[in-house]
Length: 429
Image: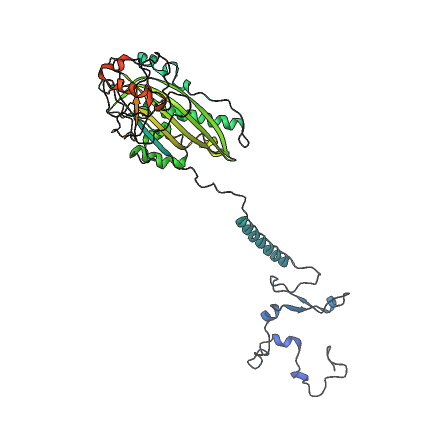
């Protein structure tokens, strides 16, 4: 009797049958899994892990049905009915791969073309400073501050910050009117703090000036304050006006000031401000008594160049590029890098010279080519309280040299002419 699944004409000869006949489920039996057949029989785990799996007869009856299907690497052990679409695990795996790929692509893009722009490196140039002392040719005259001012060209100067006036403000090609005004106001603040603050003038403070500087200049500024030298970059008096406390102190805090400010756009992101001011102080010795009759005048002409970029304007800070300073009366032997050392009332210096520069005159004064200039009294016919402007060239005025000779004569001292000071600057011989 044939069993279901046997051929219609029975089992052919030569092929095993009967009790030894192989049945599909026999491979599951422990007897079938003998050592004799282990090398050719696949266990259940191997079958479940197969990449290709045969569809059932019912699945193969469908139109355009295939004989086998590919199993996903992420599918679990048991086969699923054929639905024509990937399984849930396959979709999750594909989504995971896509997310990882997108994250990697975004990381590469951000690394190559990041919208973040790092802050630009510091670009402020170091300050270059020239400080020239002016030596008098006669004995320094003393008196009360009010009388000294009244007989000098500073008689018409304004007092303090009122003497630092701003020019008419207009926009430039790349800077708005507000930005230009901010630059000028910051420059004025720097002048006020570095030239008029009593604590700064006396050498007791430097922070009011430091906080207005670009951070790139702070190291140079700190070295100039702690170890000033006349090397052109580390003179304290290039950054600010400071008196040597052992030599002189202010006799009157009402400093007389006059000068100009100007601005110019030098590049699309740099605005330059130039300042040119004369500061006239009254000083006396630190051991002077309460009376003010021993005061004397001390004049400082400062020409500064400042630069501002958009960041400086927002932060209200200055890039001080250069400073040219002449100040007197001082002795040529005095080093003004750390602080000015005025020659006080009754003192005199021996240096003389013919070259002429008037720090009270409008426009840039003639610059001394040496390390010291010469301070001389004005001509004897200078009107009291007027502005005595000396000729630009001594050779153009035959009376120039005789005037110096007269001033050097003790019989014709400072009392013979009003104290209307003019500055004659020349290189030291």
